[in-house]
Image (tube, rainbow, N blue to C red; front, side, top):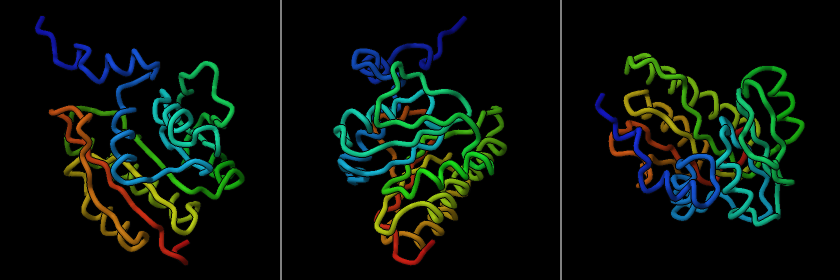
Length: 203
């Protein structure tokens, strides 16, 4: 049986393993933050779709430097043992009434980050539509729970209405743009939408 390139541990996968991160996705956040400065020490951060936990762990280790806090939420538990002291880990649907209530209690936030992706079906139209829905839901969370001058980054599949989501983000943020990190696989159709400096009065 032919071996897919995704079955082989590429440079980023090997690096993540060596550095103790659950997944290679950590290097996407590393590049995004180094070029756009989303998170700084002392910030309160919400990580939506956090499992297995690489973005949460990188935020804890490198970006917050022990000063600040992270609320991580996913349908599955994050794979961090132990869970860092700066992290409040919630298991459930971030957009459900129960979890949303918890997020409000823990907020508001200086940054919202999301590498969330829907369960894929292999049908590009279905998958991009689901990805667009997820992105829209995270933007709604940002409208409600992100502080003025806060920042966000969300993942969306290209072809999934990213221009419409960007248009909405430009109403909320002083600056919004699409960005594809080098750590994204060559054959991936993901792109990240970055919102910087949330406008006053956009809650």
